[in-house]
Amino acid sequence: MSQKFISYLQKQKFKQGETLESEALIVAQKVLYNMGLSFIPDAYGKFLKQHNGIKAGDCYLFGATVDDDLDIIDQNKLMRKPDNTLLLGYNDFDLLCYNFKQKNYQIVDRNDWKVLETYDENDLDDALLHIFNI
Image (tube, rainbow, N blue to C red; front, top):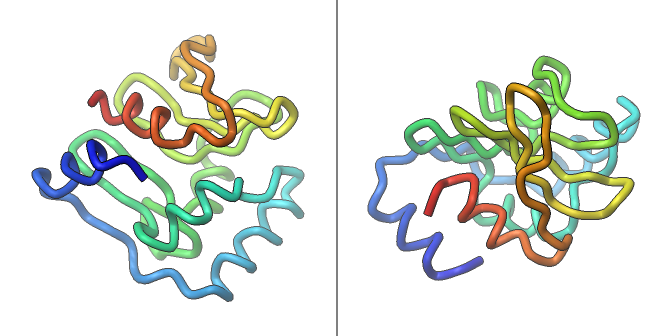
């Protein structure tokens, strides 16, 4: 994870989900897969081990099996998102999705679902910086 993103978080008042248990990540992976979605990408899974869901201002990143508005399973059931994507988070204007067909992160406009930016599946840091407007 980039130092720029970590520095940003340290300056913000942010809420974080509970510590990630390995079993919780496995359960979340299975439930998402059974919903017809993809497994959580490796880079995001590593991120969850450090920060299992984050809420900072108007930005949300979902975590595995948390009991509130940061739960990745609940949010992928409740929120509208483009086909073939796993919703990872959002801000007031955009969604952060992982397109599991194209194997990349996408910043998607919340209103018309136009893909605004695309990041390689190994480039989670830049996608996080974008969704947090850093």
